Length: 298
Image (cartoon, rainbow, N blue to C red; front, side, top):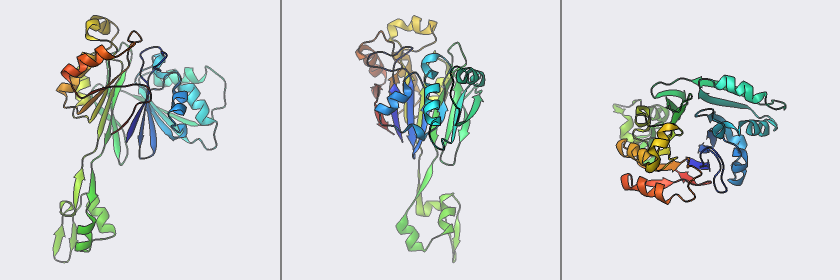
């Protein structure tokens, strides 16, 4: 599992920071969280194959988080067999997508499925055999969501133990699913020949003021990606515009049993991030300041 930060700025791009988009690759599948202006160019620079993107999770419909959608859709759709793209977002996503797709002229050659999500409390909104995505509503003055990508626990089989007991074929599949198997005169339990590998959890909280859902969603995350639009001296301004400070996000990480915190979504007023980093690390030492094209393996 690898995360690439394609933009780390708040509201407007700067010379060094593009607006928001975060790319997650899991077992060869590409997932975007937000798609701000210039996202597909950032993907080119990061050497990310845009055709891998099959799902986009939108936090909210402010322009700096969605204005790259049309370009990306047009580019992906201009290929042979572009397949299907599923776009998840808060209430109003279907209406906004309809307006967006009518804003310019091109042949829509890709199948687009749109799923509007309502999640007053953290809940599963998408699931596969290997992972699930949770969403929870945020406080930003418009419908807004934060997300968690949660890898499911899996069993790692011990080949030597399987061989010693003579277990093969369908019986291995049963054990992987947590079922016991019966051998001649003996019952073999999954724990006898395997161990459970705990799945990783990544939470993404962008554009919100402080609220209870953040901690509920972020709880026990291996990685929390959170907005830090302002430093603590601008807390009143952060509250006015429904954003958070680096200090506030660090407190959330500290109280939510988070292993690592990555801060992003920085106001253009900050030419350097030293002060933001300092106040966050005083509370939560394992804090990383994101920058465009930062890649993290989880």
